[in-house]
Length: 248
View 1 (cartoon, rainbow, N blue to C red):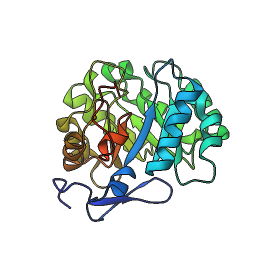
View 2 (view 1 turned 135 degrees about the vertical axis):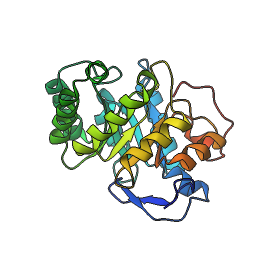
View 3 (view 1 turned 45 degrees about the horizontal axis):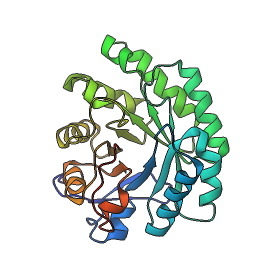
């Protein structure tokens, strides 16, 4: 496969990454790549409900929320194909692994089918790779049947650190590596997505998130090797609204 060809992959019914599919051409196919994301700290239940309704209407892959909202979202999406995604250790990743694992287990028990966790970035920058891998493995053990995406926060890392984070994620059993929380100093870039895809190869997915608000940006991320898109601008990406100025 050439990773310059956007969309030559598919996502199976569990939300896990698969290869060798034709590129998405319809808004429906694009929607299946999108985690419709509402992570603002002041998000109300009414706002979260709106995101759920939009996800159902447009056929997005998941609704991604802070873990406190998981029971509500699971109820809103019950009986649909839209998946429930929860962030864990968000947005800093700077807490004990046991805490992340406990949050993960609680989210899964409440209905989360996908988990997006944040690594301990400082430990990675210290060179304590064993700590980072153990952190990811602890969350993996807490959600053996869920899709696990590992947020490496690329804007804070050197290229060598990005490569290390990707290798550690693969070794710990992640299903995806993910660029960003959207809450730090930068979001997804084409260059970072391409680097991540180079490191992980065809075995797992790459999720681009943070600052993706237009169809042009989405196409660039897919061409670089992204296989999932995290955004609060999903409706704009499928051509059903104007691009937004949102933060995710």
